Length: 248
Length: 336
Image 1 (cartoon, rainbow over the protein chains, first blue to last red):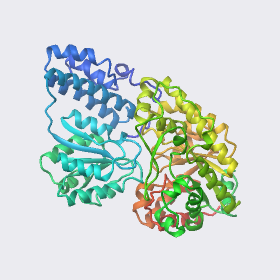
Image 2: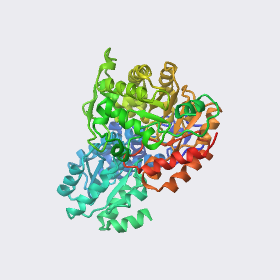
Image 3: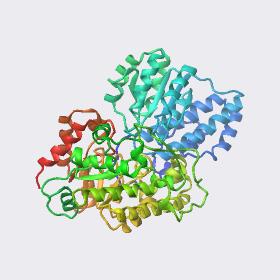
Image 4: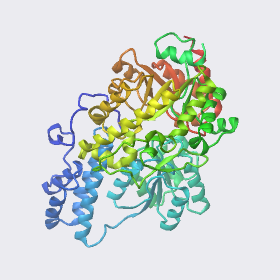
């Protein structure tokens, strides 16, 4: 997240003021898609229903998902990366996007085709699962099936889930210095089980040096990298190759 | 000067014999546990063990203050949260679900708050520390900030959403959080605490929008600090540059800053009187690097205006003892 150096706008209600300040960029030239994207950007999970229902009368559900819902979430992700949006807004936007996706899937009569599976979790003992909310939302939005094990997740649960679901990638977030030591344990057990999948670790408590000190570990610097990493993992990139690519 | 005298000298804007050094957050490490033969989970639960673990910061590490407790769950437990043990290696955490309250509930501050959960053991630990230390080293007792307590009792994600969707609904919970922390602080003072450290992690710009701090939390933090008669440290994790000016308005005597935050900016925004405490990143430098890198990090922070050398946040329990000793060496080399 970029650090703000100009504080003159910190009192602004960006969520109400988007057109005026120009902080949120137009996401689609198509007014139907743009309207829906705006509800994602505004984090309005109730208001999004009517425009979704209207759009699904004239547009294909996958077009709405790709050009309005995912596009809106990508714009939110950009604003988060640039320090314009804060975590509560990202959470609300992810909720609005999910409401939209559910309505689109209902119209399709089936769930979105999923590219592959990713298991996500927050480290055992860690109080919040907010560290992975953005990653989960972006993975979901970009077509990955997210098996979200949630917060305070024991090592054994992560390993079992990986054995059961055989994901292309597993992620872990740790916000507290007391919880990050679970990650090398997970990596060790996955390797012992023959599951040498990339283990993307991120969050306030971990750094590149720590994550790259154990096999399977690839440092996740930004949540927005998650879909790109999943694509690499799905394409068969090894954890070593991914570490070289994403961690330098 | 003894340890307590030098800490108090800095707080009262007098010249210390040399720079003080201590941890404002948890200081317990496995190395220290071995040395004093006091372990977790008992250190989170029993007053005597808690005091033994805290005392090691002075007797083993050479910090100028000791600090209890080591987790962020005492008020939350007393307000109805379900706890999860950290076992022998970790700190106590809070389990969600269940949450004691939902956003539309009207929270109630229990009349017997100070008798609930492990609060009596925490107070006992402070009394033991006072008996052991007298006025040799300062006793820092920890409370949790109103916003973070609200997050504990509601669960953090519903609280974060409410800050944008229904901010008026969070006030009763900030009020409850303030009452709880203030009541605990007063009891800790009676038990012998010299300094109160308020940890308010959930109020960080890494979690809430900066404006939420200014418009909501500031008022409750000010109210709380007004009611606390001894020196106060305010600790918020992460890069707090966007809210540091407000932190300076809470009435805190000392701001505890991680190296991610800009100490020079804090000085500029908060004026010449506030004390700045901090120095080295706990998750990376202190935990993983060597003593020489620790020393370098400390010197950089001191050059940026840090007046009391401290770990930037709670010390990772696996931190090597020699890195903590290196911090004390740096502080000793900065004569008053």
